[in-house]
Image 1 (cartoon, rainbow, N blue to C red):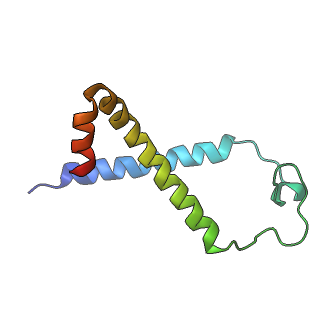
Image 2: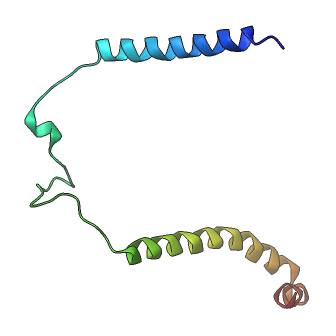
Length: 96
């Protein structure tokens, strides 16, 4: 099998990405000052260490919240269809 075309495409892609990065680094505006590297949180200056560890419970709560939010998105169309079908079909959904 001839891989010449594949090699040419990969080299062209790598060259294109390299050229675009070089051009953006050459023409991008820069400003170096000490304030730029400070952490910024809602306009309030930080005190002490900026990085804090949160307990795992916060992450679990957030994941559970998202899980039930997505479930609600899927249940809404089902609820609309159930209203149109009536009580006999609703009982079939509940007990099947």
